[in-house]
Picture 1: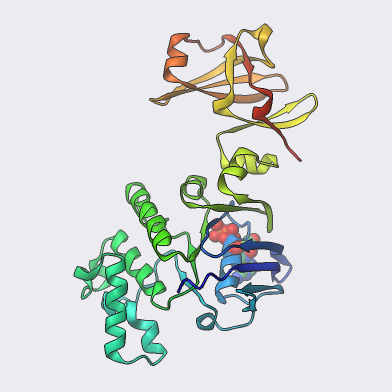
Picture 2 (picture 1 turned 180 degrees about the vertical axis):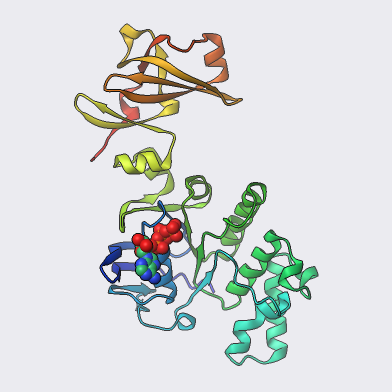
Length: 327
Ligand SMILES: Nc1ncnc2c1ncn2[C@@H]1O[C@H](COP(=O)(O)OP(=O)(O)OP(=O)(O)O)[C@@H](O)[C@H]1O
């Protein structure tokens, strides 16, 4: 484990008949990165992950790990491991035997298998439940068992397909913190597929935003969030307004908007919605061109100078808060 091998996708393509699910994408994942593949349903994230895992043949391009071409190796020989959305635990095997399963398949002796499974269960804090069957576990515990099972092969890259989607919202946030902690402790690369931008922002060092089989934008999470290059990325990541201005489309964060007198503003608007969010108030206004923009004001800011539905306001922002969009 932890050999510091970079993962690279080179012109990676997947076609299912006439459907191009992944269209010549390229990305370099530095060893030890927590990366999220993010995008709407059908954009090609799972196909990309399955090609990296070796569960799907590639149609074109290649995948290298530490410079070694793994494109056509069987899954168990790649140095990757996959954790599935529904965990795919064997119902008739105990947690310990589920975790040890892949070692049994590769002919490792019983004593070594038990010892290694024990270490992995310790890692995910499941030692006390080792003899239970999957049906006797909670969702979060099943997830930990599935993680231990994936990690027992000492992969350089762990691939996670929507790993939190089967959990209720409260548990999802807790397991999210555990995933991040585990990745930090192991120091291996995690590639995590999600369609949730909150999940990606919370977890990822780097995000790869996919749209329609292509990478729309990728890089350090904060850079992508702070400077979206396209309207799609700005809208998908949320918390941004995409506005057509006379000199082109811009993205400007909701929390960068200020409410001002109309004369002093970049845009005049009429308030159409006021939503109290506890610490903040989201104020939505229509602006020229029948566009809607939302300003996120602190509760102090709003209640210090409250506004009403239908009121005319100005909306302003600092020039550097606006980012020109490619389309
Ligand atoms: N086995 C298959 N045969 C034919 N088409 C497929 C197959 N698997 C996926 N596709 C198509 O390829 C495209 C990308 O699918 P993929 O599952 O990779 O998307 P995704 O971004 O992971 O979506 P989701 O979030 O819904 O899982 C979609 O148009 C899908 O219908």
